[in-house]
Image (cartoon, rainbow, N blue to C red):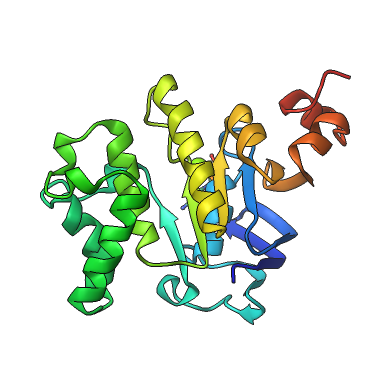
Length: 238
Ligand code: ADP
Ligand code: MG
């Protein structure tokens, strides 16, 4: 399961309404990309879904259950941070194990999940290294591995590739898309990069100033942008 529904979800920081009330439905298994310029509220929206920020209004349903007040750990979602969020003093194995250890999972189950994640991400030969001894792409895979072992009902990515150079970014995009094809788990992916949105998404959510300008498949947005902003941002010239 991995169905996420936002009903009238709003966020203000003090006096400033960063996200006016919005509705959004994310289907189980979808790859959804939130795209929009810097400062438009992408990270805030993702953090509201993750439970890292409290909503100022509205409800968040996860698999039909009201999760608006649930702690991040209870939501069953895994946030993938940029690779620099790894613990530098721990081995890859320990970095990946960390969330399971915190949850008190039995060691043999931890090992089974680490081995499966390492295999899926081509990290088997690197489990005893530290993050500093890995390439940028490998470090990003460790960050993803740390999410996979939790077997979440959805993965939340916040600009996970923005630290990588252009060539590596293209490869990692493919890897994440392949991972989605294999796991068929809901993924929400935040980026300001139109190409990433167009190449990775089943469904794109275009944001501007906290508002949803349009939701649709890459082809729908490209062919029928609803307004000049969407057209300028990802659509064909009109
Ligand atoms: P994006 O991820 O699209 O670049 P953010 O969600 O980080 O945008 O930010 C959206 C807006 O909310 C920005 O104007 C930002 O300054 C503001 N903002 C984000 N977090 C906070 C916070 N903790 N306190 C006050 N304002 C914030
Ligand atoms: Mg952001």
